[in-house]
Image 1 (tube, rainbow, N blue to C red):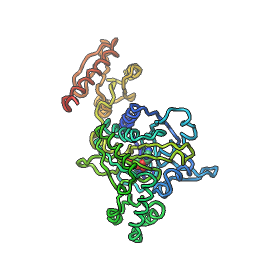
Image 2 (cartoon, rainbow, N blue to C red):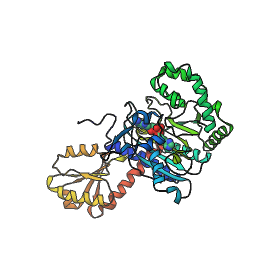
Image 3 (tube, rainbow, N blue to C red):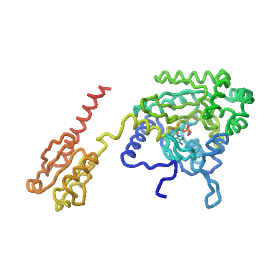
Image 4 (cartoon, rainbow, N blue to C red):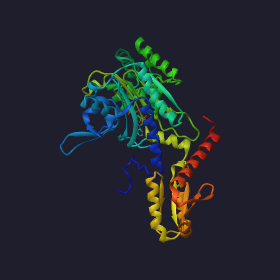
Length: 439
Ligand code: HAM
């Protein structure tokens, strides 16, 4: 009982700050691209996912947290966010009011009953966007580019893998070819593939069983079955991406694990880095021609993508290590004797109201132990308060990175401390440019 549910995890303190940092940068990028936030419920009616994510997907087949609520309705904790966004567009008739395309970004937890392993959780978090109602190769490229910008904003180097599932005609022809090819092997393939063979043979290309992967290697390639217009669309998307300096790599076996995709699909993968274990795709998405209609809306096409925040965190942390000290407290206030605790508390309150990050201990503590706490909390400065300070109306402020002490007059303490902080940040910036050049 004292352990978290298998596949879930707590995010605490510095780690939570890093998550916030990642989320904020992604949100900023979405805003730059003109996307507005949408927050949809975690619980949705189960049929929504059957109709969208699809019954041939592993997600619906075996990974959903589905249960009957007390009123006997089958509900599901969302395994992904796209279906809920489409449902919300229909429930709120958003398509009737706004200019097309509708552009939304979202952020929140998702739930999949998967086998936990590196980078794979049962509760994880996604940031993503959906763009609905004005199909164009430019918008497919915009969404791919938006995700790419998020990685750039976090300085995480990624490559983009792309494929086209083609139009209806391409997919039908390809499905027939796959069935013919796999017919002679399917008896020896895994149970999942046997099921996939019957409902959606394209899914077989996604199989991770090593023996099956060998068979998959010899399968016909989707690109040989694309109609001219599907090929042309893929070329257009590639050309727009190239004009943005994104070299996407075509991956013939990229089919993605959700049934709603038609046309362009893509994924982001971290560039190989020393010591970085592979955690799978950092994000993925694609074009969906019929999803909105399938959940009861008008026949508008859309495109979207989602990034997995746990995986993104893993790579970001690998590159940057723990939080830089600039994330710590600004000041740690230290009473030299317990009788000054009350005065210190008033000062702390004043500084907090003036926008500074400040803390202190209300317990009588030795000087040494207060310094230890100040360092653990990554305080930039300690403010030391004792008898002298009160007699002379002067406070001692110690820079905890270079140990230099400064005296500050009590009457202009807020302004003086602000100036000291500003100087501290300026010197950090100088140091950054000395180390990284003026990028
Ligand atoms: P997805 O590929 O299933 O796509 O998930 C997107 C990302 O979520 C993955 O690339 C991965 O980083 C992360 N992710 C998925 N499952 C897990 C897990 N069990 N643990 C940790 N991270 C995970 C979608 O969900 C689509 N809704 C994307 C989309 C949006 N397509 C169109 N619009």
